[in-house]
Image (tube, rainbow, N blue to C red; front, side, top):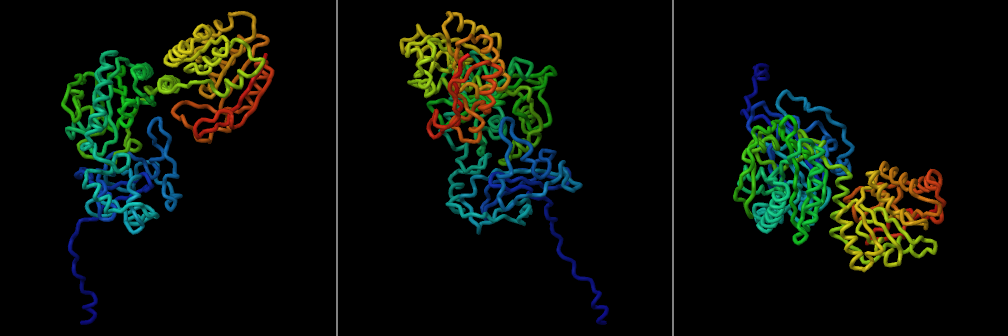
Length: 582
């Protein structure tokens, strides 16, 4: 009897739903990335992020190959932005063994991926506060941590404070910060709609283009009937009349220059313009360019996260709608465009949407070149900045007894040093590719009553013929020596343009002519910089000196490489300063 009892079957346990299969693969101070495996055709998979028992955010996992293996965020940066580095991960989590290179998670079912940006939650977290990610009420394991993560540091605030902020209308935004919902931020709504209307009217007047809501702003208009609460910016765009990416990109640069002339502060990026009204500097709109290619497909340099395409044959223009803060334009075929931008599951809110992970396609041929962005940068810079006196390099050169009476200021910008030389009694020809800079330089010369001593020409040194014609004018005034003057210019052009410039100077320089330059060297490359939004190239001073005396046949009269030559605010760059004579 005892033997029979030992083989009696145990009572059957109550049936429960199977635990979800998934994993949080990456968990850094800025980003959470993970996946869940579900049977094909399953309902949308909601994923929740919690700090203790407080729901911080919720998103929907996306089916399809939007993320490729562990570490994917390090391989797919936003165009024009530096790739995130592994230093963003918590120190206790690295190094990690690399995951698969494709979309396998060793599951026969459908893989759906998700992400959250979380940089703003840590000031409310403490080591006693578990951070967890769950779906269907069940926590997902976090690689290297188990079923939850404990923050290693004590934040300045508490979960209770975060709860009160959420109750007041704050939330975790798309970029991971805690901010007032855009649906409740009425001041922001009025400011961005006013700026949008100004840009819309200007492009309609100048180009005949309709500027309509795009990306997150369009998604909010279609899905929410207003702004998306967790969105962080205002997006607008237009369809260019051009049929190729390079021409559409050049047009966007021209639009940037137009808006700068109209008094707006414009940051020209690879795929969009960031536009700010200087009278309201805390509010920005982004303007994107699109075009229909020769196959009639609507192209987006910034990219899309969907798999369908919008064709010219289905484009029916735009229509005006009421929108919080004003009125705006949306495409007539708005839902088709939203599906191209965000995928067929665009109706599911995704506060954790991440272009690094979710982008499926882009049109890189429409990105603005370095030269285009540099031109817009300097136009914007000269429109926003001015100097009352010459630079320290001007003071050094002007004080030399052997400095010639004629100066060709190459890359003169807004004429700061050109006008200073003219005030000192010298004749000056200033050259710059920026029409805004040249206009400001000429106006500055008139204010100083030295216009008779200063001439200014718009000249793109990358255009060799244009440069040669300008230098011809500079050297035609007689046989007296002159100086080719280049301050803070050589580090703003690339190697190829510098080669062409030096060759043109070599051709035009006569015996007795001078060469004066000051630029950042490779010893300054790792230092912090005040102005960082434009192209910079750091070259070796010794190599440049050797080229100047060898290939270009100049004699060095003075050269030095050090800090202290031109400090600006908190920056003291390592510069190479040289004076030479042929």
